[in-house]
Image (cartoon, rainbow, N blue to C red; front, side):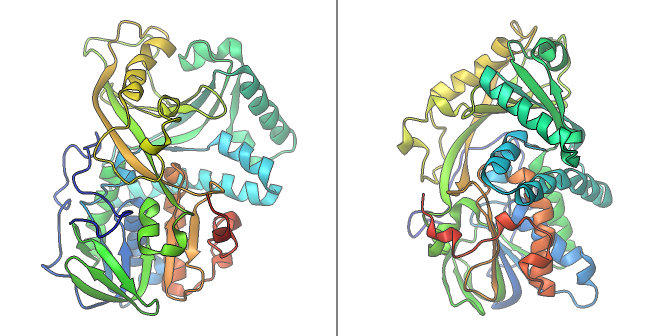
Amino acid sequence: MSPPHPGFPIENPITSYWLKTPHPLASYRSSPTVPNHCDIAIIGTGLAGVATAYHILSGPHAEGVKPSVVLLEARQVCSGATGRNGGHTKLAITIAKELYDSYDEEAAAQVTYHQLEQLSALKEVVEKEGIECELKVTRSFDVFFDGNHARDIREFLYVKKSEGVAWAREVEWIEEADVERITGVVNGKGAVGVPAVSLWPYKLVTALLSRVLELGGQLYTETLVTNMEGSSPTTLLTSRGTLIAKKTIFATNAYTGALLPQYKGFITPVKGQNSHLAPLPSFRPPIPLKNTYNLRFSTEYADYLVPQPNGTIILGGAKWTYDTDQASWWNTVDDRTVINNGATAHFDSVMARHFHGWEDANANHDMVWSGIMGYTPDTLPHVGRVPGSQCQWILAGFNGAGMVMIFTMTRAIASMVVKGLEYEETGLPGLFKSTSERLAVRQ
């Protein structure tokens, strides 16, 4: 599976903590070659692609004769960003402030409420399908180490609370004097507590994928879509034969530009670094880590931290250690290696440096990996019908925040594809819609 030109997924990516034990479906193919025809082809088997297939085949619109759904994956199942991320979703207060600063109140509020919807939707599907993915409904702390940043967020939050904005009631401000006692983090200048869910993303996706196959879907892993012809229908040329799809969904995130050239330069592949920390087995933290975290060192740089039920920690970020070396992380799809050792060294220092009582925990990495995210000029995803097409849809460009957007987004895409709904009928935030106007602004 050698990519015919840059932009496609690369073979032999470094293994993440989530992917360390491959699922039985990891390299599954429903038949030796792809079928000649299908009703709906979905390219990509991360959360976006698999959840879309799940909603198409299990939703209320799926009664009667189900459409034939084929999922195509260039590598193994869920080997992209979903299988490499932090494993949590939350109300992202810093994103909310940026939206309110940049757009009108209604547009910003739509996105913020959309974030909150993910929490209940994920809990609902996990309970409905009996999925074991270590889902935990919790709170997440954003801890601010820059006093001015803390002040700005505090003022923004209190304005929204005074205006009676409903989502703001879900957010708790923590004053500097209380940060260490409540969060366990030392030297924070302020913090917020927000609703959150943590989980094992690979287990969620593979469980949903198993259900998709039970409902009649077909899966072809290690099957690269090398080229396409037409759009109504679309002829997909793959490494395992040619598939003609009446409708095609691009759940391709950072890799979208390789197949849809109109998105090249608008969804840019960007490399990030993540780790798994394993404290000494004998270590008992003075304040048990029951919450997820974003450690916000400045307005630009932050780490994400997600405690695991076994006492270990997922920790990612450290962008300032490689930011100036743009060639190492910008416009690359190479997730075979980590970005640099400076990021790894930072990860090894975080718990002892920033958490009360962790000085002797020896909370160092036992795994470190990279992942490829899709970035857009306006930091918003592209969702809906591919501009100019009647039978192609996209959900991609999540800017490293896919878990706070994707799951309810896929329900909407399913309704558009199966029921013919227009974007404006789905209830999705207007800012997410992929349009020709947005595609006129290059990075």
